[in-house]
Amino acid sequence: MYYNYHGIIKNKIRDNELIKIEFVLKYHNINNVMLLYFNDGTVKPIREHRWLEYFLLLEKYNYDYSLLLKKDKT
Image 1 (cartoon, rainbow, N blue to C red):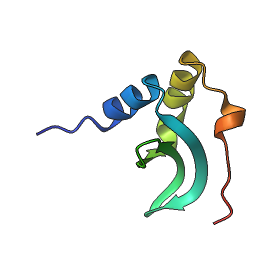
Image 2 (image 1 turned 45 degrees about the vertical axis):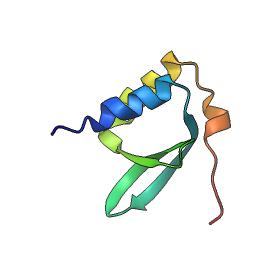
Image 3 (image 1 turned 30 degrees about the horizontal axis):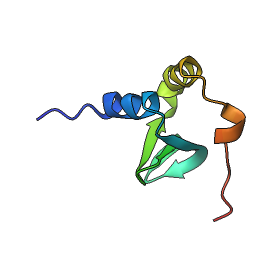
């Protein structure tokens, strides 16, 4: 069965479920990753080569980057 990873994430963004974005240098052996946090508790890593695609999507749905870019001190 095919799992449409990015399609599911994009639907969650469209449905206004995104609560936080974080950029980290390393996450589970992935370098330079954007972490998307959703209101159901899931965290989805996005590799650097797909960032532009997601920035454009966030712009399309009028997400305010300044409110989403939070850095936890954990």
